[in-house]
Length: 183
Ligand SMILES: *[C@@H]1O[C@H](CO)[C@@H](O)[C@H](O)[C@H]1NC(C)=O
Ligand SMILES: *[C@@H]1O[C@H](CO)[C@@H](O)[C@H](O)[C@H]1NC(C)=O
Image (spheres, rainbow, N blue to C red):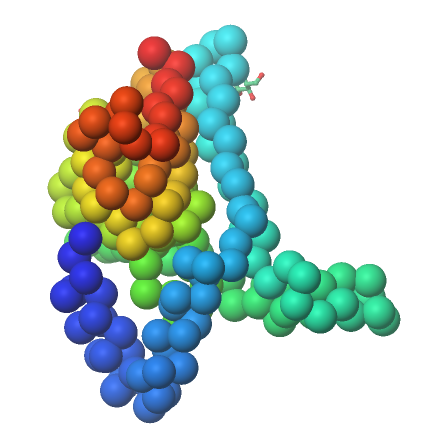
């Protein structure tokens, strides 16, 4: 999905920040092949939706015996940033990133939608902002890696866990994908 745009963004950042392109690409594909993170979506009896995630990144790569923690995870933790997308001085969407990571792993459109993924996903313009369109897009777009997505809407019952093979889920019977929704 939108791989040309991702390539252009990667090249642009490499040029602007004077970082070798290969280094930036390596950092971005590393997440594809090495991650154990997960997300949950739940609904309280009063209809309030909760969407939470962790980012288990950097496990098993060197143990810091001084602090009893994974060494790479400790180095990555300060790189996590919250980004506000603003239009006319107002926040229209929020996302959590590893600094230098090109894609969005966790996004919130206030009062409309929350989305987290546990491999890689490119948000697709307006579709991000509407729960059903987002659900449809997540099920039908071809992906770079097998992934699972946790999607929350802005109303009671709007929660889904979508497990995706790399190819599309047009034929659920033949693919290894599953869709589990509140509704
Ligand atoms: C709904 O319930 C949750 C959990 O008990 C609580 O934290 C939240 O404030 C409640 N929301 C409203 C709008 O009452
Ligand atoms: C939920 O989002 C839709 C757009 O997807 C919007 O039209 C609607 O007003 C929102 N509902 C609430 C309760 O915020």
